[in-house]
Length: 234
Image (cartoon, rainbow, N blue to C red; front, side, top):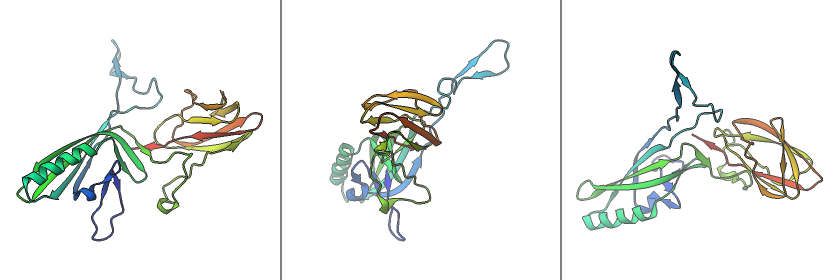
């Protein structure tokens, strides 16, 4: 969902995909954000006290299951036929995206509705969401300064880097890869290891951007390279 700052006396609106819930006449009553659970892996070894924890053995960091989020709304309909019509309309339009503060959840959406009384009905939107919410903008998108938060937001501008050259990549909480766009073949050095980047679009499976600042150095015979990175956090 995308929540707009609530002015005093003004109700918070929610956006799912391209639709604002206020446009449906829905009033937000409550938000229940679930917590993704760590996908644990343990092995019991005969003669060993306790279990051997292999949760981070493969990736070097924990991975998570999906989280369940619920949004509860009510709306004034006045009769049963309007309730059925509006509930059907909402079910047909809401799907996939649920975001917040410059980030969004990629989610499968289900909509349940119940008639509360003669005048009001309730809508419950349940989201089976991926554990991390993703940044709406990548490092190749232009920043919207009107909505930029100078205390928490990070400027990531990794476009058209001259070769040879270097950048500092600031990783978000979610470990993830990136996409390179090079005008000519280059060599990139990241966390002390070097990789060959061909001309055009490419990825390097061994380059994993984790939380914090990391240096990327580019060597080659001129040209430029861009790095597309999308952050993610809980």
